[in-house]
Image 1: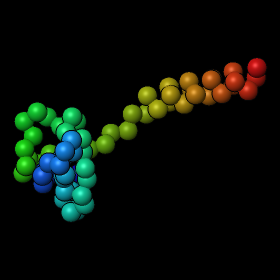
Image 2 (image 1 turned 45 degrees about the vertical axis):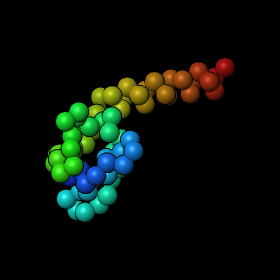
Image 3 (image 1 turned 90 degrees about the horizontal axis):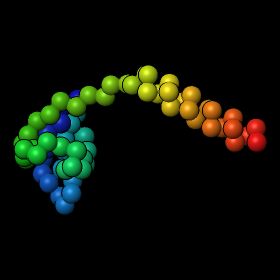
Image 4 (image 1 turned 60 degrees about the vertical axis):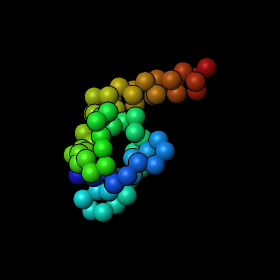
Length: 68
């Protein structure tokens, strides 16, 4: 997904996607040199290994909670 920074409002960058959807992103998540008109490629990569570890940890906690 491609986003363009349209403007800054308080602590947010108001961005538009290539599908013209508005997304507010905290400035703290953007590079320091981000400016109005800057264009970024945003992608989401699933972290299968981390997800599996988290599910296992939660399952173990639930077992302890319900078995006590």
